[in-house]
Structure formats: structure tokens, C-alpha cells
Length: 243
Image (cartoon, one colour):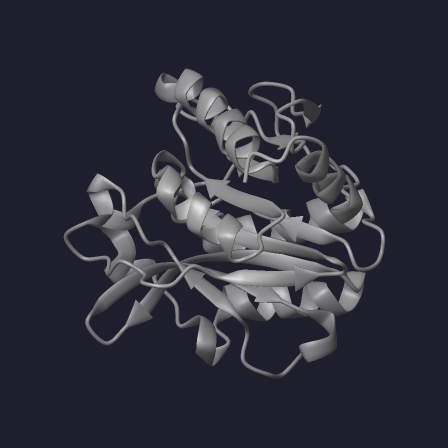
């Protein structure tokens, strides 16, 4: 999706409508790009950051959306903490409405974040239906050891929620496929688009053997979807046992 910088209410309304229009199957996993509610503007964190644990506007919308769709939803943004900010994504789970949401804080803050954003310390895995999913955010993609550690902990799929610029699109595509191939895991990658073409999307779902299951149309605001299978992950790992 295209997130208008700083227009939180407008972006939340659009994000909600895009999901409702897509009508995802119940119990699906829905992903939003990095900082989808505000746009990628970490320099404005003091103005725009929220407390996702306190149920601020983004959290309220995502919780409501889980109830409306009966889906798991992974979304977040700039989260206010005692000593600065965290780039956080939270898992909103329809069966756990009202309880504390599992979350992941970006372990590798990008250069514009490094002055005020605190690096996360823990790899986070979730169970979605029968598949184990590990989360990552944008710049994390460049650090293969993080994905390998998640794989050793049981990850069968990786999510990559990003604001990855078009200037480094070749890196985006190459690294996504590499993370899938070297770990024999799905990669579910969502990126934003912008009117000025700074961001061109190129969201993908990549299979554990590195083949594309579905690819977004470059530069277009859209929803893509795919079915993934824990059985396929284990079949590929058994047939080609690199571990």
C-alpha cells in the first residue's frame, strides 16, 4: 500500500478497507508494510509514535480488524518505550482479543533510526495454523545469521515487512530469494509503494526452494495472496537435507 507520510488516520482507514475488500479466508495471516500507518519517517517518531500495548489508534484498528475478518494480522510501527522508540510489529490474534499481543522489535535499526530507536534483542516466532513463522523488518533482511538462528528454532516461514527503496530493488529481490533458499523456508515479503516512485512495492511470496509463488505488479498499490504449506517445507528439507 501507499502510506501518505504523517497521515495516520487516512492510512489506517485505507489499510482497513484494502483488507476488507480482499475478503481473506478466515484464519489467514495478513501482513502490512513497515510503518504502514505513518509512512517511513522515523525522524518524526516523537510526534507520531504510539504505545501499542496501551491500544493507541493503530492497535485499535488492527484489533478490530482481527474481529471483522477472523484473521491473524501482523502490523505495527513506531512504538514508544521508556528510553526512546522501537520499530515494532505485533501479532493480533482473533482468539486472544483483549490480551497482550505478541510482538517483535527490529533487531537491526536502519541508519535513520539508529539515534533514537532501540534495537530489539529477541527473535520472535509465532504459530499460525500449523506453520511456524519468524518475523523480520526491512533492514534485518541483510543479516542472514538472524534468519539462520530462527530456522534452527523451527521457523518454516519468514515475514519481511519493509519500506525498501526502489534504488536498492535488486538487493531486495536477491536477498529475499537467498533467505528462502538457504533456509528452505517460505519468505512472505511486503513492501510499500509511493507516488514519487521512491518505493515500488515488489511484494512477494517465495517458496522454500526459491521459486516465486506470487509477485506483485511493480509500483502498484494492491493486495496479493497465496496458500502456503508446512508439509511442503518438510518435504523439501527431507529431499534435500542441507541441515
